[in-house]
Image (tube, rainbow, N blue to C red; front, top):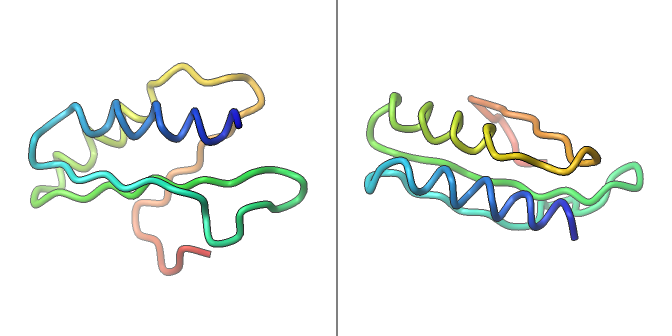
Length: 79
């Protein structure tokens, strides 16, 4: 539950940075790995600067100590 709530909070913070930013969130295709729940947040916008600002805002959200954030700026796969 902590991972889902953290993903929701990060997505809300990212979406609030600009009306051009589109944010999608949900469980990762492989929902659990090594005993940990996984969620993903996808950020897109017409301008790269808007994506970077949204990603920084999402990363800046205060998260529980047991939640990790990994940012992949050019994912080849969502797995």
